[in-house]
Image (cartoon, rainbow, N blue to C red; front, side, top):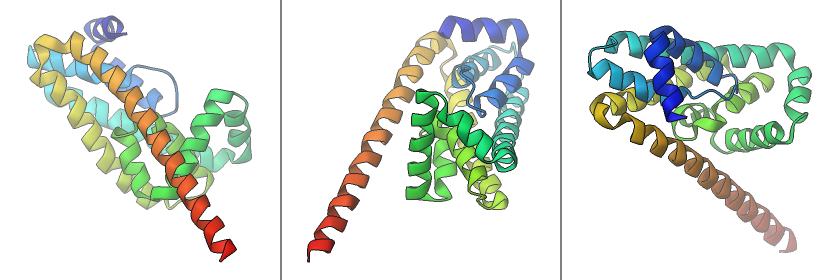
Length: 201
Protein backbone atom coordinates (compact mmCIF):
# COMPACT_ATOMS: atom_id res chain seq x y z
CA UNK A 1 0.00 0.00 0.00
CA UNK A 2 2.86 2.41 0.76
CA UNK A 3 4.34 1.82 -2.71
CA UNK A 4 0.94 2.54 -4.26
CA UNK A 5 0.61 5.81 -2.34
CA UNK A 6 4.05 6.97 -3.46
CA UNK A 7 3.34 6.00 -7.06
CA UNK A 8 -0.02 7.80 -7.15
CA UNK A 9 1.44 11.04 -5.84
CA UNK A 10 4.46 10.80 -8.12
CA UNK A 11 2.26 10.26 -11.18
CA UNK A 12 -0.76 12.47 -10.49
CA UNK A 13 0.29 14.96 -7.81
CA UNK A 14 -2.11 17.24 -5.96
CA UNK A 15 -5.32 16.45 -7.94
CA UNK A 16 -5.25 12.79 -6.90
CA UNK A 17 -4.79 13.86 -3.28
CA UNK A 18 -7.93 15.99 -3.44
CA UNK A 19 -9.94 13.17 -5.05
CA UNK A 20 -8.77 10.52 -2.62
CA UNK A 21 -9.38 12.57 0.54
CA UNK A 22 -12.86 13.39 -0.79
CA UNK A 23 -13.71 9.76 -1.54
CA UNK A 24 -12.34 8.50 1.78
CA UNK A 25 -14.91 10.63 3.62
CA UNK A 26 -17.66 8.71 1.80
CA UNK A 27 -16.40 5.35 3.13
CA UNK A 28 -14.63 4.33 -0.07
CA UNK A 29 -11.53 2.18 0.67
CA UNK A 30 -8.82 4.55 -0.57
CA UNK A 31 -5.44 5.29 1.10
CA UNK A 32 -6.04 8.96 1.98
CA UNK A 33 -3.81 9.16 5.07
CA UNK A 34 -0.99 7.40 3.25
CA UNK A 35 -1.27 9.80 0.32
CA UNK A 36 -1.05 12.75 2.68
CA UNK A 37 2.13 11.33 4.19
CA UNK A 38 3.58 10.79 0.73
CA UNK A 39 2.52 14.28 -0.39
CA UNK A 40 4.21 15.82 2.63
CA UNK A 41 7.40 14.00 1.67
CA UNK A 42 7.22 15.25 -1.91
CA UNK A 43 6.59 18.78 -0.62
CA UNK A 44 9.72 18.63 1.51
CA UNK A 45 11.84 17.69 -1.50
CA UNK A 46 10.31 20.50 -3.56
CA UNK A 47 8.44 18.27 -5.99
CA UNK A 48 5.09 19.59 -4.74
CA UNK A 49 4.01 22.86 -3.15
CA UNK A 50 3.35 22.43 0.56
CA UNK A 51 0.54 25.00 0.43
CA UNK A 52 -1.09 23.24 -2.53
CA UNK A 53 -0.88 19.90 -0.71
CA UNK A 54 -2.49 21.32 2.44
CA UNK A 55 -5.27 23.06 0.51
CA UNK A 56 -6.04 20.01 -1.65
CA UNK A 57 -6.18 17.60 1.28
CA UNK A 58 -8.20 19.94 3.49
CA UNK A 59 -10.71 20.98 0.84
CA UNK A 60 -11.20 17.39 -0.33
CA UNK A 61 -11.81 16.21 3.23
CA UNK A 62 -14.23 19.00 4.15
CA UNK A 63 -16.16 18.61 0.90
CA UNK A 64 -16.30 14.84 1.43
CA UNK A 65 -17.56 15.20 5.01
CA UNK A 66 -20.33 17.56 4.00
CA UNK A 67 -21.27 15.47 0.97
CA UNK A 68 -21.67 12.45 3.24
CA UNK A 69 -23.78 14.46 5.67
CA UNK A 70 -26.16 15.81 3.03
CA UNK A 71 -26.30 12.51 1.17
CA UNK A 72 -27.45 10.80 4.35
CA UNK A 73 -29.87 13.56 5.21
CA UNK A 74 -31.41 13.38 1.75
CA UNK A 75 -31.52 9.60 1.32
CA UNK A 76 -32.62 8.70 4.84
CA UNK A 77 -33.70 5.07 5.18
CA UNK A 78 -32.39 4.16 1.72
CA UNK A 79 -28.86 4.88 2.92
CA UNK A 80 -29.52 2.99 6.16
CA UNK A 81 -30.59 -0.03 4.12
CA UNK A 82 -27.43 0.24 1.98
CA UNK A 83 -25.23 0.39 5.07
CA UNK A 84 -26.99 -2.63 6.57
CA UNK A 85 -26.62 -4.71 3.39
CA UNK A 86 -23.01 -5.69 4.10
CA UNK A 87 -21.85 -6.99 7.50
CA UNK A 88 -18.67 -4.89 7.55
CA UNK A 89 -20.52 -1.68 6.66
CA UNK A 90 -23.25 -2.49 9.16
CA UNK A 91 -20.70 -3.07 11.93
CA UNK A 92 -18.92 0.21 11.21
CA UNK A 93 -22.26 2.02 11.12
CA UNK A 94 -23.17 0.62 14.55
CA UNK A 95 -19.81 1.68 15.95
CA UNK A 96 -20.29 5.15 14.48
CA UNK A 97 -23.75 5.40 16.02
CA UNK A 98 -22.43 4.32 19.43
CA UNK A 99 -19.55 6.79 19.22
CA UNK A 100 -21.95 9.60 18.25
CA UNK A 101 -24.30 8.72 21.11
CA UNK A 102 -21.42 8.75 23.58
CA UNK A 103 -19.60 11.91 22.52
CA UNK A 104 -22.16 14.01 20.65
CA UNK A 105 -20.79 16.78 18.44
CA UNK A 106 -17.20 16.21 19.52
CA UNK A 107 -17.40 12.76 17.90
CA UNK A 108 -17.29 14.53 14.53
CA UNK A 109 -14.01 16.18 15.55
CA UNK A 110 -12.38 13.01 16.86
CA UNK A 111 -13.57 10.85 13.95
CA UNK A 112 -11.68 13.07 11.51
CA UNK A 113 -8.29 12.07 12.90
CA UNK A 114 -8.22 10.07 16.14
CA UNK A 115 -10.58 7.30 14.97
CA UNK A 116 -10.50 8.16 11.27
CA UNK A 117 -11.94 4.81 10.03
CA UNK A 118 -15.20 5.77 11.76
CA UNK A 119 -15.26 9.21 10.12
CA UNK A 120 -17.47 8.45 7.09
CA UNK A 121 -19.98 6.64 9.27
CA UNK A 122 -20.14 9.54 11.72
CA UNK A 123 -20.86 11.76 8.71
CA UNK A 124 -23.71 9.46 7.69
CA UNK A 125 -25.09 9.15 11.22
CA UNK A 126 -25.03 12.95 11.60
CA UNK A 127 -27.07 13.36 8.43
CA UNK A 128 -29.47 10.52 9.20
CA UNK A 129 -30.24 11.94 12.66
CA UNK A 130 -30.45 15.50 11.28
CA UNK A 131 -27.71 16.69 13.61
CA UNK A 132 -27.24 20.47 13.29
CA UNK A 133 -25.34 21.07 10.04
CA UNK A 134 -23.57 24.17 11.40
CA UNK A 135 -22.24 22.28 14.42
CA UNK A 136 -21.30 19.35 12.19
CA UNK A 137 -19.44 21.63 9.77
CA UNK A 138 -17.54 23.50 12.50
CA UNK A 139 -16.50 20.33 14.33
CA UNK A 140 -15.54 18.76 11.00
CA UNK A 141 -13.40 21.70 9.89
CA UNK A 142 -11.53 21.66 13.21
CA UNK A 143 -10.97 17.91 12.94
CA UNK A 144 -9.78 18.03 9.34
CA UNK A 145 -7.27 20.76 10.22
CA UNK A 146 -5.77 18.36 12.76
CA UNK A 147 -5.88 15.37 10.38
CA UNK A 148 -4.30 17.14 7.43
CA UNK A 149 -1.70 18.95 9.54
CA UNK A 150 -0.74 15.74 11.33
CA UNK A 151 -0.24 13.52 8.29
CA UNK A 152 1.16 16.08 5.87
CA UNK A 153 3.37 17.43 8.65
CA UNK A 154 4.74 13.98 9.46
CA UNK A 155 5.45 13.32 5.79
CA UNK A 156 7.17 16.69 5.45
CA UNK A 157 9.25 16.26 8.61
CA UNK A 158 10.34 12.70 7.84
CA UNK A 159 10.53 12.79 4.05
CA UNK A 160 13.44 10.35 3.99
CA UNK A 161 11.38 7.73 5.84
CA UNK A 162 7.98 8.12 4.17
CA UNK A 163 7.77 4.45 3.12
CA UNK A 164 8.32 3.29 6.70
CA UNK A 165 5.89 5.89 8.03
CA UNK A 166 3.08 4.83 5.69
CA UNK A 167 3.36 1.22 6.84
CA UNK A 168 3.51 2.24 10.50
CA UNK A 169 0.57 4.65 10.33
CA UNK A 170 -1.60 2.06 8.58
CA UNK A 171 -1.04 -0.32 11.48
CA UNK A 172 -1.60 2.42 14.07
CA UNK A 173 -4.96 3.39 12.52
CA UNK A 174 -6.19 -0.16 12.82
CA UNK A 175 -4.98 -0.36 16.42
CA UNK A 176 -6.72 2.89 17.35
CA UNK A 177 -9.99 1.69 15.84
CA UNK A 178 -9.78 -1.60 17.73
CA UNK A 179 -9.08 0.23 21.00
CA UNK A 180 -12.00 2.57 20.37
CA UNK A 181 -14.32 -0.39 19.77
CA UNK A 182 -13.18 -2.09 22.99
CA UNK A 183 -13.62 1.16 24.94
CA UNK A 184 -17.14 1.67 23.60
CA UNK A 185 -18.07 -1.92 24.43
CA UNK A 186 -16.69 -1.48 27.95
CA UNK A 187 -18.68 1.72 28.49
CA UNK A 188 -21.83 0.05 27.21
CA UNK A 189 -21.37 -2.92 29.56
CA UNK A 190 -20.72 -0.62 32.53
CA UNK A 191 -23.86 1.38 31.75
CA UNK A 192 -25.93 -1.80 31.37
CA UNK A 193 -24.59 -3.12 34.69
CA UNK A 194 -25.35 0.18 36.42
CA UNK A 195 -28.93 0.14 35.11
CA UNK A 196 -29.35 -3.46 36.28
CA UNK A 197 -28.10 -2.57 39.78
CA UNK A 198 -30.42 0.45 39.96
CA UNK A 199 -33.37 -1.69 38.88
CA UNK A 200 -32.81 -4.17 41.72
CA UNK A 201 -32.55 -1.48 44.42
